[in-house]
Length: 311
Length: 311
Image (cartoon, rainbow over the protein chains, first blue to last red):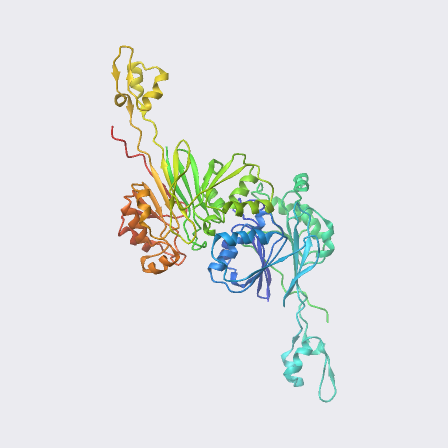
């Protein structure tokens, strides 16, 4: 079951150089989570063949236009396509006001409910969980209240080995208990261990989304050991002063956070429109953290189930 | 000097089939007027090499999302690009509320002023004029208050014939008066007529934008004799009942309005996403009004200066 990030937009501020404002989709075991929603997100969802109807949660980092101007279009098109399922939006204060006034004047009432879950971007807390993930806010340092999101896949139960069920003639109603970690005692009172009966589930995977933010090491403990880290890298390090003034990061700063947090892989993004060729940003980051890739529209990053729990 | 319409978006409701929501730019003698502003307008302005900084007036027909969701992106990007010139928006009530709440929460204060000119979509009245055009509202028939726009080029002065200035030794300060239509009397008291001294200016050109609307003949007197008519044609005539219920028009209805109004050319648009191939819509309209063309993204329609005033 996949754990995969798709980049829908990677530019900062305005669409330029055929790059679009921030939007991403994370797929975890068949569920889709939309992260930020720059203008044109609905078109790029379609272009990337993302099944929009499977998105039930949208996570918004902050209210700068390049992260939200596409949201009303997504919501409106859901309505025109007859969506019935509730949609949950996790966002800083006031996004509900922005959306509600547009819904009031710009069309039909939506045929599905929207629930806004207003977050506190200054806190690191669990804001959402379902069967497959937990989502935590990451307090970021920007010009307006801004949060990142840490997606932690939930530990899945171990898998039963089919041959063992047959060998020990284990009744069906005992299987869930064994998968959950218990040993099994047969009718003769013999104990067959959980370890013998199961294949261990893979280790849970994780993704951290950190945009927009100035360099801030206080996020390191929150994202420690994350498999996949997206950290904005609006500028080259030669623009450090401007990055600090606008509370953005350089590629070297993004890579430094990845290094300190022992991330598995770093994805760059939120590039300034001044950079037409992005190789220099990538090279700069790689000089600090080699396993770095450019986030680009349509690019997919999968975290494989390679790490196994130790039995 | 050109009078030219560029289609930036031609689909209805949602972006689909590589077609985008409504937006158009009319160029009149070097001035640019933006009409409606569906999501992605700023990208299509750039793709079509329209000099965005030359747009100082935006005309909005109604508040359905497919006509306005791109406006905040246009306004915001003007700000990020350092625009200083005032921007005038002609629109039905409440658009100012929608925009102002977004400007309040989503970024920096804009470095240029926006002036909203709230119109009454039920009236046919002059809402704007400058040196080159007058713009009138056209009351349309839709589910919410909706107006079209009639752009009338102003009559330009006749041109002096350079050889005549030399022949009669006409002083420079007399020339404007002659261009404006007056004869000239020389120092011997001889009258040289305006007609002899000038080439007549071309007849003013005109463009009518009619979207969205049910079939309504009451607009015919307003747009009588218009050179270029854009009339929405959301559906084929086989969908007449649905068109009537949603207050849209069929291609045949658009063509009937063009015929009754003695339009020079009809441009179709605002197509339902159900139509991937648009030829049938065009064929249907041509059966009533032969000089019909499909409005498609990037297509330009020029009204040439072919008609001359009669001397």
